[in-house]
Image (cartoon, rainbow, N blue to C red; front, top):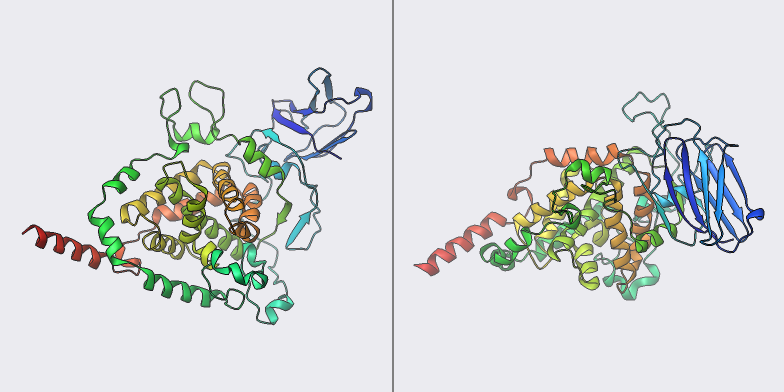
Length: 450
């Protein structure tokens, strides 16, 4: 069966699905509407879409344009006027209906779509609005899932949701091209953390930091750059936060940040998974997202929106402790301290103001919502796939993040942003001799001028 190209939109009464199915017989078309699911079949095409709310079967309207090969389906909403969320989250729409009785931590659904899709999303909506808020009383007793045999055998785990072990065993010859750790399959979380910090302290180059501190003309130019999603439109009107969240351009019906064809191709070929993470794991996963997103935003700023593939992979991996050292975080201070430290140790430009400008970029991206966060991760996935051995990091982290981000509730990103805005971090908190290095540089400069 072939998954056809399609587009999804909505009005108050209908979900509108336009399916590209050339050379079919209109008389052979069949479809089913059942609760939240719409299934379409016209040999050799098959399409199954699962929506966020229920549909009303028996009221469909279908029209086939044989010249263009387009089947237009109007499917009635069970509740007229109800807003259907996540019409842009392609992997979710193509997923199978959920089995509510599953007890697995991760359920993999085996459908693999083949072609491109175009849909719209309301970024302010959560994927499952009927769920109770996390803050409400939980009448269920939390159960602890038994440790797997690997954990009992003291095997190190890492990657998205700590789901990987012995991943690097057959990759010893290229290990240094993927991660920094000398022996990741034997190093557990705390050991990885201590090793990373010690290596960072050894790698800090006071001369390089002092040079960028004193001769910062090029860095000041970088600070003037405005990332593409914050730029003015071609109408020369500045975008407001409301414009960016709703995806509407001033004086235009077009959407800002709509997925490109390349991005849609990646999305439809992602595996369909459902992630059932406990609160601690969800927290660690969110902070890992923050760590990686900072590295992506740093690379975007220093390349001023025109990155090269090889340098992008290196910059992003080097700045992110999650990717380079398989680290995991449980609190916001640790992760922010980590990526600021690494941004002052490893990349070409090492400047305190630059590190904080990138932190502001991250805050803005997260406030724009998950579609924009997802676009940054899709860009990283594309870089890694084309960058030597970096594609292994997609298998460990980025593929799963690209699926999981689509399921994120809006309030989760906003909570992280709120914590970041309240956080106070000074140079003395970073664990590097920044002030000492700056004072020595200033003193040396005064001596040279006397």
